[in-house]
Image 1 (cartoon, rainbow, N blue to C red):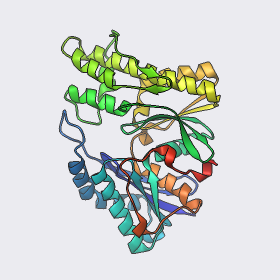
Image 2 (cartoon, rainbow, N blue to C red; image 1 turned 180 degrees about the horizontal axis):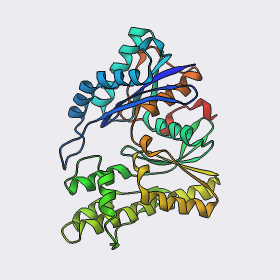
Image 3 (cartoon, rainbow, N blue to C red; image 1 turned 90 degrees about the vertical axis):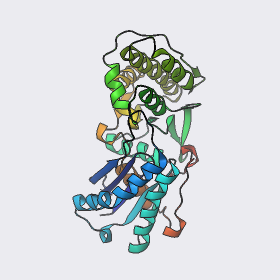
Length: 328
């Protein structure tokens, strides 16, 4: 039975996971850097957190899986996109383990990890994928060995929108769960900028608007209206892509995928199109080592890996530039 270790370190989370070729997640351990209230992620401080926490996280993942480094068939790591200092911590640790134990090394695109783990956990075969996180807002479909973009953000991502609104309220990033809780207490919709261009979205005007509204409206109603507006934009571009591609499955992945109101809107879209709604389990929606371990497994099984001296990181790395041989 092939088993591999996946290491995630793109932003606020340092995670490690051991998985086998059947898709059984043997362990999934993480430590999350939490910035001061009202602040975003500071790359240097987050990387220090990762460097401090890495030994215990990796050892805990191996212990929980009841394996040693020698038992592993490969080491996978998040090579990008992400924050440079954070990416380098994960790459350095993975490269060391790979070299010391003479194990193949598998670089993994972080966003691809979200999609492929979600596909495996939900048994999605050929879905339209909605990737929603701090680093991505994209509507994607697999075509000829790559995930192709059928809609995306033109400026900030949905995760950045929510986090920056949270920071304006004095919350720490990631602020998604806290903003969702505040929004659940709102019941009055406030008119906000709604910007969909073709099948792409723009959130920067929406963010500017809600920040100005904080002096005039209750934060509960602003949070409620922000979610209603942003999620309606996402539902529109998703519905248009479903109508074009006629997919039988909609897969929603990424940290923002955990939002309940978003589920309601997308489930309504799926009902209109006779499409099955599939969402990654909440415990795997955020960044984690499991997404890197499983995608690393797919690459390893297809003969794609490198020597440790060929390890790399890419802070900017589009998902539609990545070859995905099992989606040929």
